[in-house]
Length: 150
Image (cartoon, rainbow, N blue to C red; front, side, top):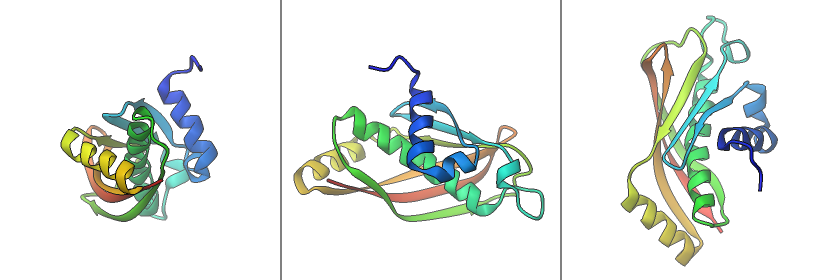
């Protein structure tokens, strides 16, 4: 068993399995089945206005939510492919610097429905929310439907 902290293990996994995360410079700041916080620098994610490119913002938010579900599925001892089925982003303001994506999950009844359905039917769906932060302020909100397939 590895003695590396969960943040390092998740970051390594993301960079190997989802190469875009490495190209974006994504770093895992927190990794628990209840909360994932990712960070990314402006430089590799910049647009022509010198703010964060919208696609990078959406990608980091998607990664945060996906990573949280990945950790929950692993903790439950389940094997499943996790896919994004639908997502939406709402941007409050442009992000002019390094930014973070945070996904917090506390809906245990929804998780239990997802887990039981995945075990019973081999397919389940869960909606997760995340938000982007810059300078301590929420700058954008993400919502996505994720599907687990056995």
